[in-house]
Length: 569
Ligand code: ADP
Image (cartoon, rainbow, N blue to C red; front, side):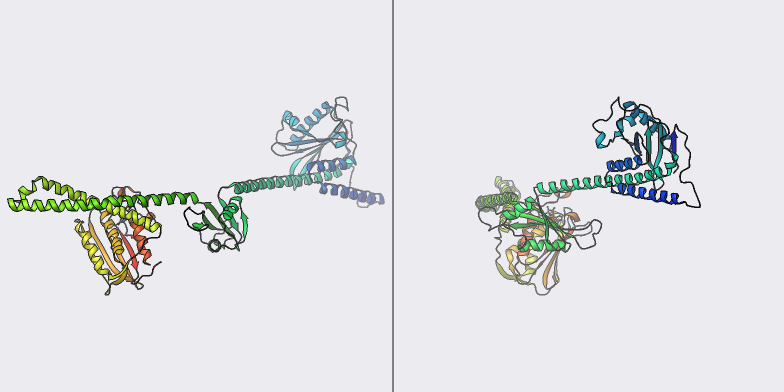
């Protein structure tokens, strides 16, 4: 890169002229020059910040010239200007320096520089020994006698400009120009390195700040956080996790359920809300933790083995307490509701029979059905039939609630008897058909021997529930098919309707307690969402399975299996 020399002196380029024969003096001069470059090169290499580069530069230049100040203007947004004085300088001289730099920068292809802005942002980097006596109006001259500007280049890129100033005229000899340019090149590379290092440090600081913030978040989280490496060894356990595990008396190394949870996640499975209970289930609710664990994958490498496991721990004891209170409430209320139901049912029955008898008598006496219908007793009888059917409905609800409590507390006791499943299905189909005028219920028995050892009442309840739903959720009538077949040696019952069907999204949920579909179609049907919950519990207590499939928009099929002899779970 060509240098621009602005000097009030006449400069002649006699330095480093080419010569074919090297004189002894010339060899000595070259050697001296190389030693000099070697020494200053080492100083530049050792510089770890821009101030040390400035010191190295000043020292190198001062060995060549005696001058007032040098400056370094670095490109960037904004420009960075450092002025390095060799001795205390007057304010006027410094102003002149800034002016010169601005106009010289324009010559070497710098974008336009605003002198005022440059003056404000410039940095006076005085060597320590000058800092106390710097910038005094009385010191030094106020005018620039000589000036030398050299572009600073790195890999043919102009990164800035080095300028040298002196009060006297003719200071900067062209004989030393090449050497000065070399020093400028050293300084340019050293400054570029410093800049890269500064950027790297800033990035590192930013990353470190992010890391510290994350650490703070993790340690202050209310949820417990546990992270393992690829072999399942714990690498992080935040404060909440330590606290929760200690309270629950769970030893991370020894606890088998926790280890198997971690192993599952390491095998690629995400395990949700697994409950861990501390101590015995007694009067008060024991401390209960809910732990979810997921495999930890390197970003964008989902197909590979996980690099660890991340698990979140939550204390759900208070939820359990609320659940327990709710269950106790339901249990107490349903028992209390059942008590008055028995006499209501009994007396209604009694009244129906009495009125019925009276009406028959009146009918026999008058021998006229039409006039008997007009009797006030006839109206009473109809009202009592309504009371009876509503009482039965209420009884079913109360029984469902009682069953819910039994399932909750593990008290769903089964009374096993031997009976024929085909007979039981036929009975249920018959009683469902009586109250379903719009529907045709078919029974299809595909197995020869249908003998089973099970709780007859409970199985009747299951089939009744599913059939009731099949009728209830197909308001336009249609066919309902009950099919008995075989699946891997167990009985398989399929009950198919042509009703409103179930959105596939909810298929997994409808067996949950109090779960009712929240679509506009099912809102018009009465129910509390317990039937299928109890149904599943009964089937599972027998060792069977229950599931539901959607039939391409027209109705659905509920299927359950039952072992021929009990296989209690
Ligand atoms: P419910 O008292 O609400 O009928 P269930 O536990 O018996 O309670 O059923 C749960 C929910 O499953 C129902 O609210 C309904 O949305 C849905 N469901 C059950 N059976 C059927 C069916 N045959 N067709 C469509 N939806 C059904």
